[in-house]
Length: 170
Image (cartoon, rainbow, N blue to C red):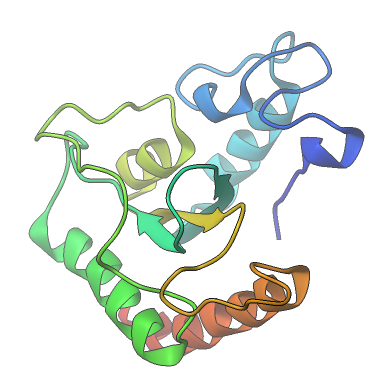
């Protein structure tokens, strides 16, 4: 299991040196982004079939997945696995939807410095970014607690259940 959380030290997107770790996946270095460099080096040794980068989105009031559309090596077969994961997750929990999200990159225009795109391109992984709202998931609102740590945990379980249900296909 590979993970790192700069937010634990109070950094939102950056490490202690102020480097945006969300944009270091193409050419990480030990000097600027050792967190990304070491994680990617470990993945180079072991491979990577599935990756989920978990973020929070300040603007869109919904849980959604951003995929790797636009990577140079895109295939419909690889993309279909991502879309199938999203479809199954939407069935698994009312706290996920597939209508709202980011615009898809044009063919060949994906930003390979982002982990989702880099891991899909580098390893052929089914890779995605899970975006969660800072306020509430409007498709299933909670007037008392809004989007809460408890709901995050339930969504995490739904993601793992979805992955378990299709791991042999990935």
